[in-house]
Amino acid sequence: MQINSSNLRFDAYVDNPRGGALLTLNQGVARNDGHINAPEKGPLPRGFSSKTCDKCYLRKIRCDRQRPRCSYCITNGIECTYAAPSRPSRPRNRPRKRPAATNTIETLSGIANLHAFVEQLQAQVADLTQRLENTKDSPAALRHQEQLQTLAPSVAAQSKKSTPSPAAPPISAGMSALYRMDTRVPGSDAATMDLPPYREVMLAIRVFLDSFNAVMPLFEPKNLVKLVNDWYAAPQQRDPVSWAAINVVLALAYKQNLAGSYGLTGGEDLAFFHLSRAQSVISAVILGDTVLLNVQVLLAMIILLQASKDLKPSLILIATAMRLAHELGLHSRASTSNLDPVTARQHSYVFFIAYILDKDLSMRARQPSIQHDDDIDIDMPTPAASHDNPLTDGGQADHDALDIIPGVVTTLTGDASVNYFLARIRLASIQGGIYDYLYSARSQSRSTAERAVAHESLVQALEQWQLSIPPEFAAALAPQSLSPTVLPFFCILHATSFACVTMINQAHAWDEQWVKSLRKACKESGRLPLPSRWESLVQDACDFLNLFEAVPRGYGLVCFELGNLSRAEIG
Image (cartoon, rainbow, N blue to C red; front, side):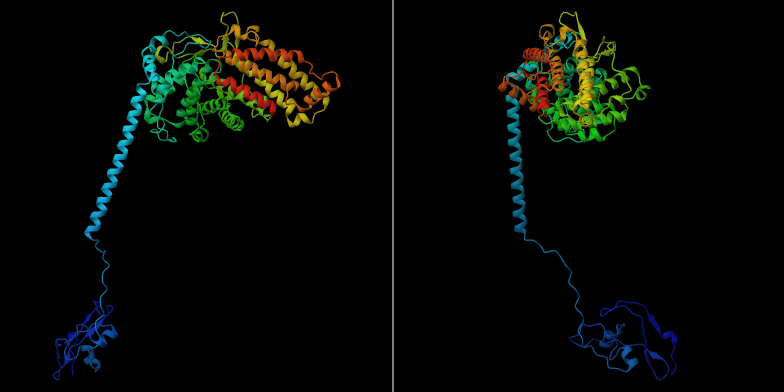
């Protein structure tokens, strides 16, 4: 028998309903004449739907389904059967259809909730609108409208004196309550860092420059005004540090509430509000790019936080501020050699304000100061230094304004003057010496003779400082010779001086050993163990009480200083 190889064919990897796809050999039926007959397909047995015979299914090969036997069964001489049923196919996982009634109910429920939410919003809007209308009709708001109408003539009439002026544009609490501010905790998003209206901010800037900044030049007036103008002119370029700077200036302005001398009502609440806003971005102030503005913001916070019963926040902030000042090189002459005179002068002012706060907190808390006097390589500000006041009528910058001396205060008659800023710097140096020579750990290890020498040097230094203050500015004559707007600053000055006297002589009710000796002397009718300068100390205390009584009520910074004075003695 001859087999024609051309009649053999290979089917490679075709689909098999029973199994995989394998290579199979399909053969025809060989006839006696040497030819192969083509396989014949027949009908499947009734009742079977399989497309593969049992043997092909087991071998997982393609079956040609020839009748009576397929090619594979003929070749192998086996019986071709279709007894096994086909494997059923897997049904597809299809999502179950939800009843139409359920979908309708849920849709109606969602619409009802949406309507309820809309009605709630409408009620809230109506309530806020009613509150706004009631506020607009309030007497405070009406007074505010009248004040705005008379603002320009009032500002134009102000003089450009070096002494803070008692007359300043009034600012009511009504317009401050309508700030339209976002009370969320602000971040770096410019949308959350909003401020009161520009005109109101400029009024507060005027109060700040004419009061606090006139005696403690924390900000260069031209730079501060430019900072505010840029804030409102370029909203997309706002940054948290500038926003914090404006807020602390507003807080300091509202603290200058001399019984309404500046027309500021509700100053305590607004000062706390703006201070809280500045504190919300303190991480950006401390950890951001270090510039002079960062140090100024921290120093302003320290001044405001002196109202706290706990000095810990102020101590932490002054340490941070001094380290940032060191990073900028404010204590070194080399860092200002390439700066213009105005910028170099402002760097010096900021450093010495930090120096004053550092030594003051060190003495009151009886903790080491951050800045050592031996590491200061710059000169103290000279009385002849000039300072520009850039504000004129309407709060606009005037770069041709007359120069005034920072920190210089004159009497009402103009016969005498003193540089308050320099007096605070020199007194701060004595405060630092009080801790170093009397209360530091190193001073405790000194001999009695060495401590006596240090004590005498401090007494002489304090007496020399007191002699440098003109008599018109002493605690006894200040109420008659000074303006009410500058009187609180000298009350702070003499309170600090009086604290130095009591700590040097340890003549206070919190010195337990001295009080016990007094009680013992009274019981035994012996000589009282009084300090060497007891009569002078008593006279200073009486003069200071008279000065304190003359200070206008409601001036917060004086209360800060007196509270710190008592805490220093208790500590």
